[in-house]
Image (cartoon, rainbow over all chains, first blue to last red):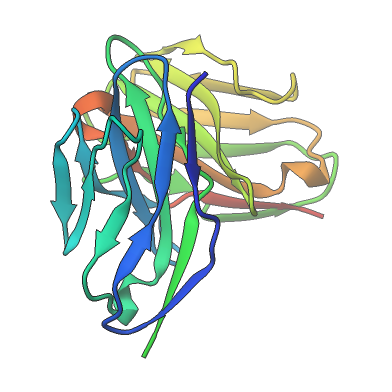
Length: 113
Length: 114
């Protein structure tokens, strides 16, 4: 079956530190990959996506590259801010017809001033 | 509407009571999903609607859980005879195309069964 594995956290960083949240996946086909973010008290928001190998998704200073050879989609940001404190979910969906999104467990990020 | 709207935002109920959770998706989104988010458990898929039909109900945890959608729009998730393990945040999402757009989520309903 399909699955997404990501570091559980919590991850605590100082402001302006470099962020990496690891995500690896297993899938029976060729998935599209996503990162969602959930700010405190809010619903999940799509942060970025990549639909094929070697694509790089980027948004709000965050980046993730679809690596088929390592089945990974690690989230990175060069300089985090306090406002980035949230829970980050890696997710995948297979292409073709109806498919439901498979989510990782979520990684809580806390950025301290 | 501009986003996915869920109501109520918080619900506290006594064990054994029935509850109804409502989701109003983005206008024009034909696909609607319910997920459950429990502490430390990530997101658990419950049910998927395409229009008014539910081709995938595989995530509903028991026959106490049911959902319907009317007019290709509003959906209601009903939990009968609630149990303490039903306590969670119930999230609704809608989309035109998951592959290209991902989901748009509502803010969720936090259900607490006491």
